Length: 155
Image (tube, rainbow, N blue to C red; front, top):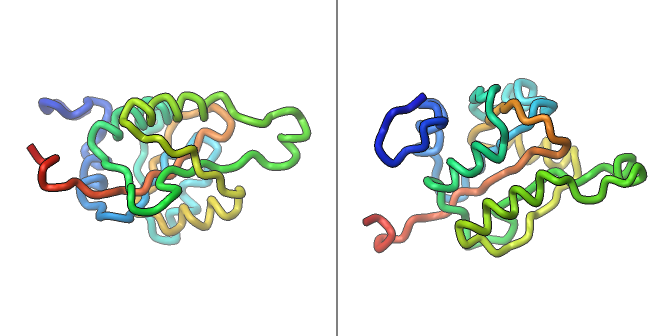
């Protein structure tokens, strides 16, 4: 737990360090409990553990600090529902509505970009960091691409 003014206390020092080191265009994955975080991180991304937290909890806290990329589309991406789950009636996971709500509170107006499962894994291998959470919702993974802070926003 971090005890600093203005910093959400559930963000660990490791996560804060990763967010600070990320540059424009770098991506961070908030991964659910089923995501192959350790396997993906063998390819390069920093692995950060946040096992007791949900993805929405982390997303809400991270969005207070991390600007999203506005220069390119799909600065926020989720893993699309696989065909076998669609056949069972799962079209839009409930957690996505939570993501949309949290994002809209920051002024984000794009829809969530959707990536096929294995394409999502490949994109995650290129991320700056992958945060393993305790999220149990199906399709509770999200990728955020860091944007810029304009000089007038620094105050």
